[in-house]
Length: 260
Image (cartoon, rainbow, N blue to C red; front, side, top):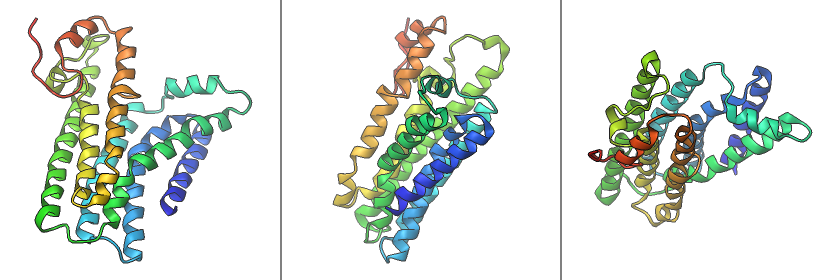
């Protein structure tokens, strides 16, 4: 209850800030930072109640913070002062108050989704028992490895795409260089790995397996929902040569490209 209240306050405050700035793309910065809020709230609540292992709590908080802050900085640089066309489209469908419509259709759903998919962070904070010996240590180290893979793919993929777009000669072209040669979505693949890496430290206890649905849902959304699938629908109609790129490049999991 405490975490849900804090998250609702964060997104409501972001909504008020967006109204003042005149652009709702600012909410995109809060997505990654919202996970940090959940991890920190979970740690403080667990410590206050005398629950959890401090080592596991600090590990999950550190991984979450590194990922969330990097993502927020990247999105802030990418968006600049521009409004996202998605939010303009949602605002255009408002009947009555545009501000209230956006709050109901953007801010409240993002609050709910973030709370659900970040539940493993709360589980990690509340699980008792040491995380530095035996099987708990093994799954924690495995989580760090999977998180590191995801963080690297997401960071390098975003950097490579940013450099590609910065070259005027590439305007309208499809980026098939670097990591983008092996997967059409290194950033989304990395995001999925990060979610699994944050869940894995909880897998040494049965309570962690109850919430394995969270990284599963996040991965499905990245593959079939608002991630890769939506991006590809947009690019298919705006990027010449995209069909050929799709034919030779793995859709999600990195793999050597097919020969022509």
